[in-house]
Amino acid sequence: MTDTSVETEPAHRDASGSGPPGRVLAVVMAGVLISAIDTTIVVLALPQVEQSLHMTVTSAVWVVISYLLTTTLLATQAGRLGDMYGHVRLYRLGFATFTAGSVLCGAAWSGPALVAFRVLQGIGAACITANSGAIVSTAYPPQRRGKAYGWIAIGWSLGAVAGIAVGGVIVTYTSWRWVFLVNAPLGIAVLALSARVLRDTGERVRHRIDIAGMATLGLGLLGILWSITRAPSAPADPATLVCGIGGAVLLAAFVLVERAQREPMLRLSLLRTPMMAGSLLAALFQGLANYAVLFLVIMYLQGPRGLSPLHASLVMVPGYVLGGVLSPWGGRFADRYGPARPATAGLAAETVALLLYACLTPDSGLWLVLVAGALNGLGTGLFVPANNAAVMKCSPPDLLGISSGMLRTFASVGWVCSYSTALFIASRSIPHDLAVAVFIGTRPLHGPLASAFVTGLHSAFWALGGIMALAGVFSVARGVGGRPGAGSGSTGRPLRLRRGGRTGRGGAGGDGQDLP
Image 1 (cartoon, helix red, strand yellow):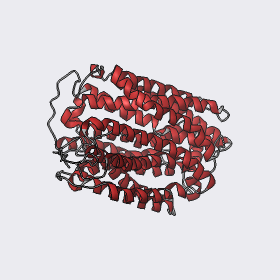
Image 2 (cartoon, rainbow, N blue to C red):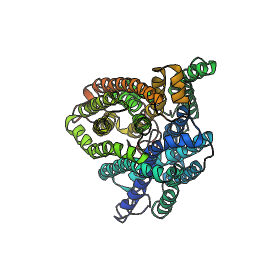
Image 3 (cartoon, rainbow, N blue to C red):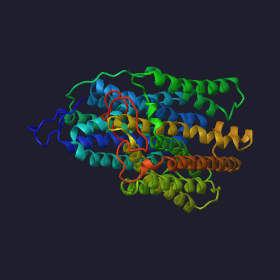
Image 4 (cartoon, rainbow, N blue to C red):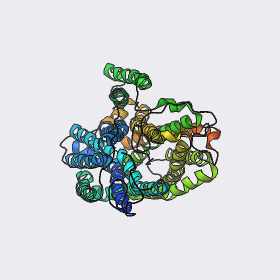
């Protein structure tokens, strides 16, 4: 969809025929906030989901993994579909799908059913996030889009915090099912607002959907994740080994497939630029090291420490609030000192936080969790906006949308793999019989099981700390392109990248924005 604004249009209406820009932004922020709530609120409910549906720990993580894997695979393709059929149409379809999936999740009668309905939720979320940036870009002129995207980032941070707080209240006083059912009235309200405010008028752009890329990446990640989550119970099982090896082969095939595509899911040629490669790999490993932390700490607080979901959520809220408050400052530091310094400082803070988490015992004071959470929030608040700025600064101007989509996809792959990696490391660090009882059994984490679980946590957090340090290495090594004032494409070496389709508004590469 192209910008068709002319000077004779009323100032209070945007170029696409939607309502006033402020109302458009409010509708988009509502969608982003609901999506952000869903990323954290479900984690609070996982211990209760396990007990209610008689799921194991390694099975319950698929409630999260299935959602993340779906959004990772579909995000860039949903943006292309928005170009082809209208971003507002895809946005509404996404909300309808997300709302329906939420209702079905709340009514799920078994673990496999819940996982399947989470996939449906993920399809809707991908359509929402991939097209929200493009809708905002048509409502605001270029010189005002940065501020609008800043409000979207604030909405995401507020949603993540609200998800933790609201999730604790819901699970403590009602049922885990309301964690999903609460999305129904919210989704219906946003759909009604979008029908009144948002309009699709404009040129459609044809794209090729990268089905081969989605299939090889999706099946490759699925094979590896499935083998890792099966490892605690059947490490030498032939099916486990075949899935793992087959997944690795498919990921290698994905690289070859993408090189041959006219409109690839990922423009891998961007990795030839040192600053771009360092920024994307830093995002990948930061997501891998950080995303499972909330789950692991919630398991610790509700298991060995015996806290209620509400009290556990209150312990985690301060760190998320700090991260949200510091995010705008992280962007300012990136503008003043260059992206590399605040991004690397943030990764250093997150590394220290993980090492503090590795010191937890069944009797540790909650102050240790609060300090580690504050450091983790500080690090995230510095790293995310600075790393986003680094990607945008080194991206060629005509590939901003593709670069944005690349960043989101690399971070999402890290998130998808974080849970299974952490649980695999934890399970392999304790005796097999205890690992089976903790991660495959359904008994509460008390007594000897609590001690075994904490021992596994130590190994997981030490390993995640090492992965976070590796992200810091890539951040430092991103090169001189991160100096202050560097413009788009200023990476220290010339770029020779072919143009590829329409970018910057949710097209072939992404949605033109970077949500945390």
